[in-house]
Image (cartoon, rainbow, N blue to C red; front, side, top):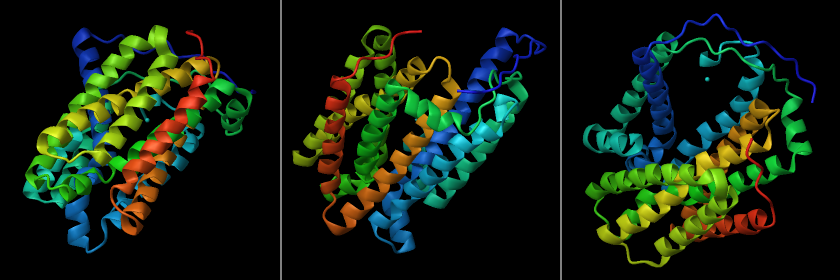
Length: 327
C-alpha cells in the first residue's frame, strides 16, 4: 500500500494525573453517549411505533438508517480528516427508563445533550492526537484484498453483528409478546447491559492467548441464547437468565473482533479499523432491516431463529482459520 507518513508531534504538554483521568472519563462519556444514541430505539421501539402509528418492523428503521449513515461516514471520515487532530472522532437501560417515565422524545433529547457535553469535555481535556499515517481511499479496499485475516475478521463481524441486531432490535416486543410486564423491560435491559460489561472484561482477559477460541465461544453463545429465547416460555426470571447469556456473548464481540482486526494489520491499523467499523455498522443496519421484514411478514419469533442461524455460520469460518499473531 502507498500511504504517506507523518511524524507525530512531540510538543503536546504532559498531563497531570487528575487531568489524565478526566480525559479518560471524557472519552468514556463520549462512548456512553454514542452507544446510547445508537441503541436507544431498541429500548423504546414499542412506544415510538405506537405514537407514530407504524408497525414495530417499520420502527426498526430507527436502527437501520443511522447504521447506513455510519457505513459511509466511517471510511470517508478516516480519509477526510487527513492530518487533523484525532480528537475531532449502562446507557440504554437508563434512557429507556427516562423514555418510559417522561416520554421517548425527552429520552432522545437527553442523549443529544449528553453527546454535546461529551464533545465539549473531549475538546477541553484531551491532548492533541496527531495522526501517524495519512490514509487514502484506495488503502481501504487494498487492505481487505491483500489480508486474509482482515477478511475473516470482517466477515465474522458481519455475521455476528447482523445476527445480534436482527433479533435484539425487537427484544422489547418479544418480551411483551410472551407476557413480560412493560415495567420490567428497562430492568431486563439493565441486566443485559451488566452482562455485556462482564462479557467484555472476561473476553479481554482471555484474548492474549485464546483469541480464536473466544471468537468460537462467542458464536456458540449467541446462537444458543437466541435459540433458547425462541423455545422458552419467558417469565421475568427466565428472561433475565437468557439475557445474561446473550449479554455475555455480545458484550465480548466488539473488543474481541477489534483485537482480531488490529492484530491482522499491524502496518495498516487505521485503514483496517475504519473498514471494520463500516462493516460493523452495515451489519447493524442490515440486521435491523431484515428483522423488521421478518417481524412484519412472518412472526416476531422468526428473528430469533434467523439470528441463531447467522451466528452459527460464523463457526466454520473461524474453525478453519488461524488467529493472527500477537504484535
